[in-house]
Length: 318
Image (cartoon, rainbow, N blue to C red):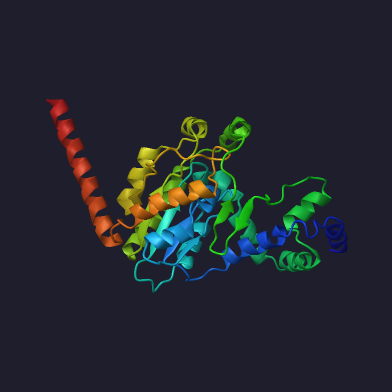
């Protein structure tokens, strides 16, 4: 403990980098949310940076909207249960928005992400105490200190970001060196592709939420064409199949159909584009039917599809 604290003191960023302390509180604050929202945004950093609660709130009639997305987030059982806890059980019109990226449905995302890190911190009295000590010494996170002491440099929070209390990470950039990120992105899916069991578990939660009267919407966040090509080629993200499974479970599928969105790294939106995406999706969310009607509609559509398939199969045998 003494060694770590001495190292932390020596490695202090100082007053020129105050956001490190705010960043630690930002994530722990999300973990503490309980029964506070009418609308919960879930997903990874694409949702965390790309969906603005204040914009959705206006489109949903002053609903309480919280962005519960986590960097590198995966749809684990623990995360899905946590999404449910953030919703107010007494909300007259609860809604969950699932931002589904190919990576968020992989085993790699389940194992290693900011949500899991925060769960570990919350369950470890020693790490909690150490984090409190570091907050008093200066803005430094536990995992960053230990990495520094082992000789590995880690990146701190960017200077162009604002950490909002409603969970949105606002990025003050509108473009950048996309090629630098695209060249390495394919590594995300090396022996790490979409797991059908993860998709099925998400669908099970969607069905449960729908039966409880919670409206559920899902969408694939927009990315650049090169990133989309890599995902479609390597991740085994079968969008039509995933869409079918979730809509049959009761979700409404949303589409980002406006003008192509400009990312700053191929995957993430700056604040201006995030506002635009949020405005587009808010209009669609306002039209999402209540969960009971949506589930009935989804089941009817599924039965209709099966009926058409049977007719086609019968005609083919003739």
